[in-house]
Length: 342
Image (cartoon, rainbow, N blue to C red; front, side):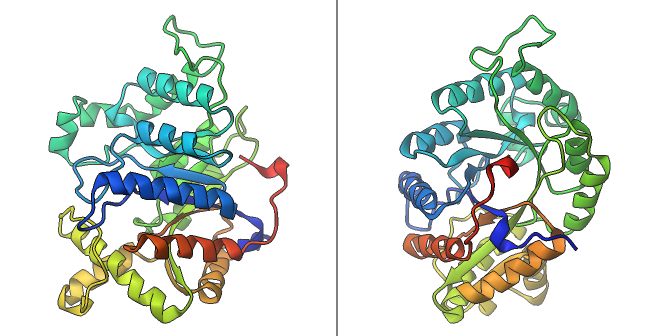
């Protein structure tokens, strides 16, 4: 087993920009700015937001706009997409948008790309893109997007700004499809194990088996998504985590309700089958005191040998959410050498 552990890998944040029950998207945006600024002070590496549509509890639909907003309110933390759902967009538009962001905020912008539409079929049609065709064209669309950032783009259409800019592209996935593509293209790979844990180990192996060094990356680089609810006591953390369980219960029921306060009686909300389904989706959900979460995450990193953790903390109370990320940051003591940075 290799030498990776929680102390010598990098920590980043995935912010779904949750809309809490009784709150508004406007407040969610303010919370995201506050979280990003705190994350920067705590030493987190990246702050990513993901594209979702037609979801009452998630306010990150205009992901590019939010990336620019967060980057403008912070100084050094990398800001990016986890991810942009490429089937919803023309590659040229994405290149122009992220070329603009990278010009405004040099060496701070990441472009994570997903193959799923990030919504239901009806909403996908409302986005004016053909879901089946664009999903099937994902590999060619990624290559087209890459070409817009090069100076040697063989086509006559140029991304301005965008051409010649260093905008790191990541492939995101929850199956082996994206893992294979990321490996073949020599790109860093992020696995969505925070909600789709089943293929994590297989996807990592497929990625490494298919990896070909590129101008972007000389060796594989894997980031895994995990849920973390940390608090000063394990009892408090377990209480806070019930909001997350109720949120995922809504997901498996096909509802898009806002993130609610911890329910008084979680067992009254779900049946045994629903509970099992939620817990399966939350296989990589680490809840407890700083020490307990640190032990659990360390075991996860040592087993998977991932290079970076993308942490999601969906906690109803904003200050408790900040505290969870603060406690997690306190577990790290080793600065990563610059040569290892991606």
